[in-house]
Length: 237
Image (cartoon, rainbow, N blue to C red; front, top):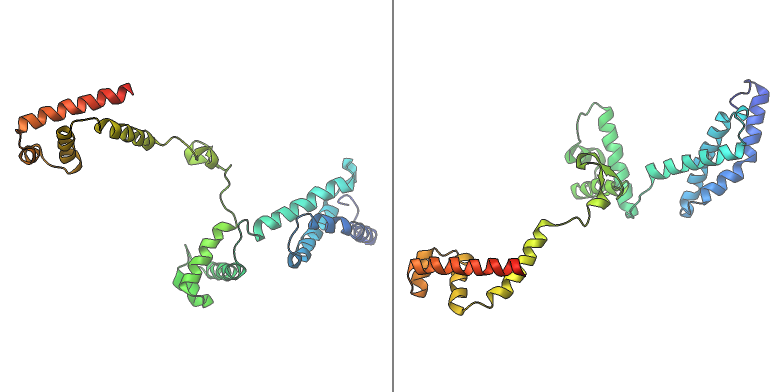
């Protein structure tokens, strides 16, 4: 059609082709299994794709029209669904408030507003309460949530999925603490008391010595000996 000479003949041919392929557009629209109230909208979008296919089709390239029309219509439908539907379920009342908030933001931008709109500006323009505005703004994330496969440039191109389940450096510490618990339970009562006062209750060595009735030098030697035992046992386990 793109190669045809403009005129009445081209107009008539264009209309005939569009009419003949309307059932194809409807079938493609139905493939997306939308709710009944949205099916007509999707059919209209499919018709837009059909018109684009008719206008751009060039038979001299050797393609069959149907093979060209189907991906063109399908692409139009996918773009519409990407831009106008929600990938995560959001209540209809929140969707409506989201639309009103977006219209208010667009209106403020057209009026010369620079930068993000404040909640007060949106509230004054829409009459929606502050809580509902915040809810509507948060719901915007449900329209285009981050893909698990999206590559993040600031993180050497790794995807979110690849970063989930990564090694946690604190996990080894937890393992060590669990192992220490069993080792500490093997210590004599007096040694455990000194460790508890010094490391858990933040006593000074002088305060520990006074509490258990031994010299500060004895406390120091006991701490060194006990920590060396725990270190050797932990490395050997």
